[in-house]
Length: 80
Image 1 (cartoon, helix red, strand yellow):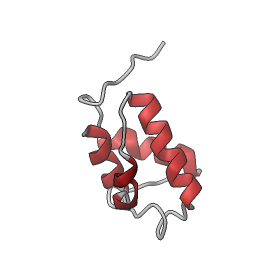
Image 2 (image 1 turned 120 degrees about the vertical axis):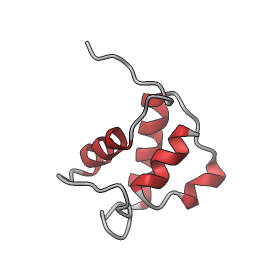
Image 3 (image 1 turned 135 degrees about the vertical axis):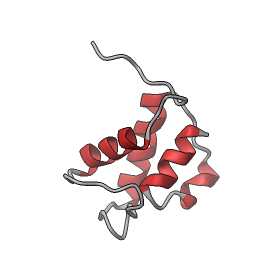
Image 4 (image 1 turned 90 degrees about the vertical axis):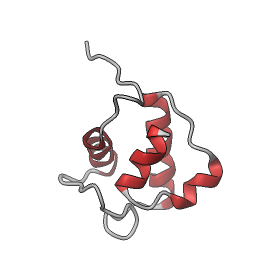
């Protein structure tokens, strides 16, 4: 059984792994752009945000979604 990670314990590597699994991409960098570099569509970004919110028990405000362009942006919003 895996131990749940809180948002305070969250690392960029965990977000990279989540993005990798969700998008089916082997290697995801911290600064990779979700849409233009990783090929995510808007629905993919929404699904990524929902997965982060669910897994780490966080809420990302709807008005912040357009600002989430990179893996690092997603990590920073998840950390609050």
